[in-house]
Length: 147
Ligand SMILES: [Zn+2]
Image (tube, rainbow, N blue to C red; front, side, top):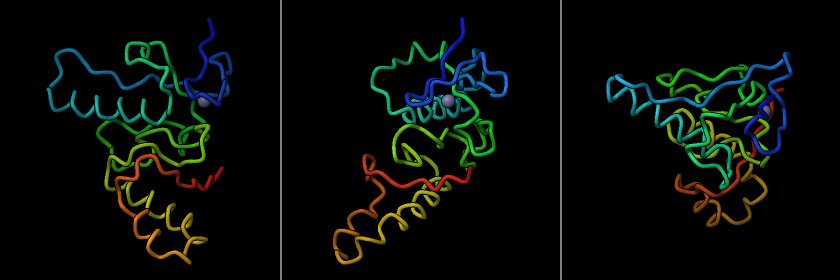
């Protein structure tokens, strides 16, 4: 059975041999708890990046994310959370380069994108000030695809 990429707007199938498909980070039995905490953090970040409310955590074991959603074509290791590829960001089916800013590197990355987004609103400096707050989880930022 071919598996579809978990990204809602993608639809790539595991049959496509020109792509790679990656499983969700999975907590390891017997691993140190801080390691599992980090894996779980990445797993949750991936799930958030999907922006799908129809997906339960228990379904993730059957789901894959294809290589087009990672800048380098593959996800970063769970402990490399400064890497933008720590979560899938490209072609996610919504006009955003991220879901949750969970690491300083990704926050910096998002602030850069947001600055670009905010240029047209400079007539309203107060609004702009509000938008810069990091907790704007549901605000959209523009991803600049380099594909
Ligand atoms: Zn995909």
